[in-house]
Image 1 (tube, rainbow, N blue to C red):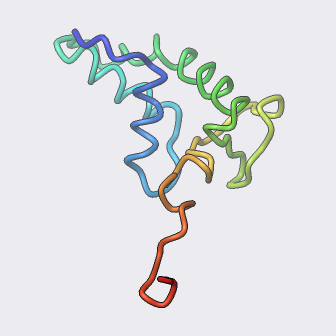
Image 2: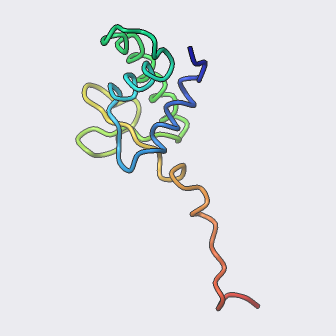
Length: 106
């Protein structure tokens, strides 16, 4: 059994995606990664609430965006069907550093 914390797994899972992710898909992937020997196909259910709570916390910290109908919403409005994605600042932190081009050199 893996001991990867859910927070680390959630951020890594979102980082590996081009778009957004359904919390159910994250819970299923977390179950498969942490308990691959568990034959119960519905075992991911026990992780779903924790995934949603973690997403709410990370959204409050500005690391994750919660989407409803494709638009970001505040954590307090995250009800019903939601999707998750990394907040723009956390997607590619190195992209915020300006690159020096040959014309910029002194």
